[in-house]
Length: 432
Image 1: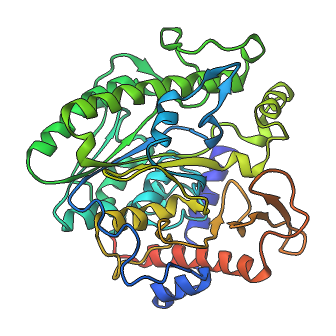
Image 2: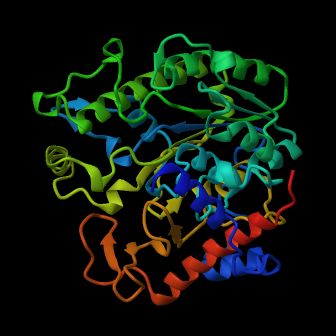
């Protein structure tokens, strides 16, 4: 489509009535459709284990899970994150749920536990709404809140999204300046360096804080300036998208490691829950060159496929907790309830489409945009419909096509219903 036709199409499509009455959207109806199963305990596991602690969310640009513990001809690609994984909660089967808005959609999903809209970015469709959110919920429980991003707040309409989410304060390029530019703003090193001082000030105020940092130096097309090169790529990876991607994410890991050390030195680290995840994929399976596909096959030892493309890491560092790997499936919509459990904030009266991953025994994640609507990720794999359910394809979480379907017809129908329920509920919220 040319841009004018697309804008008309998007405006009309976004205005379509949805088929679900928002009055029927209750937490009970959501949990029934997902067949939510939680541990049968009077008090959930890890409940309030980090009560009163700060929460720092770090959203890593285009960061995929295969980078964790990966070595390239003997070189660790992400040594700092590898070390953190060995001391933290790690969720290897965690997946993106973003739509057209990519990074900004991830900010929306994580902070609301709603799904992205059918058409256009959430920042364009929902920024005029009074969104129930993590910043508002945490503020109501005595937290300071702020978000940090080195780009202009007007980019992707974040100025309005941040108002809708209720962030008390945001920091953008007016604060970070335009020094050491990488991609669309100041480098991750500048982001972390200047943010460190602000977090210390917030901690010294005596009130806990909830903050979100948006890393950006690993942004497509991964043209990292030579002054930032940190890893020596094997010759076969030079001048390839995969090689450039690995080099950019290696730099992002280095900058993150510097941030971690500064937080440990100033006392913020020991008083904080640190949550790190990727915002969305960096290497789309469908547009890779044959050379890049061969490199990904070398990395995985098999064909790079749908389940790999959508797989992002989730790492949660909790003061006083030892390392643990959680094998269950999770997605970005699950972060709000998971973090709330850790700090002891109840979501009893808050509609959320995700679930607490620390207590979940089963899960499934509806997908749209990067896969056809009705695609879903279950405990056993990824299901992608064709014209409908009957001609859909299934993929194993461990790689390759699955001979048996990874989703039932009921789950497929429920996934579509959940997406419609989220659309209807958010559209029914009062305007700001």
